[in-house]
Image 1: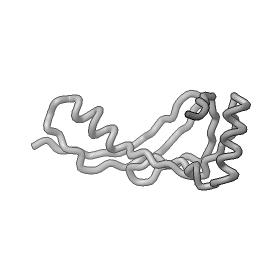
Image 2: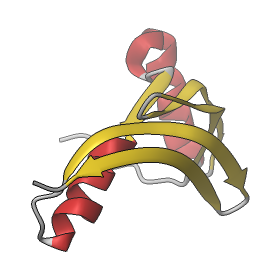
Image 3: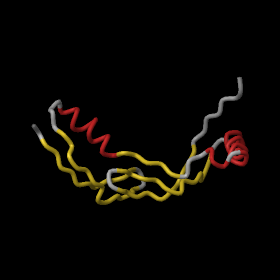
Length: 104
């Protein structure tokens, strides 16, 4: 039951790092391409403004732990991880970080 909606949506916000988290604060909807989806989203947000989160956190250390260290097949342990700098580009985000790890 109900209608299916699919549309390209452009969001914006303030990107920064804290510890091992990449944080997007003050999330805003800038554009919804499909008019029906835009109208439905506008109505849903009028009924419940808390429907859309205003912030999102991504644990970058989890990615490093799972996809980089674990993929290597060793028993390396990530001891410390800290985001130092974030640079936004038109098509990507560059994250500079410091880390320390140990191998038993």
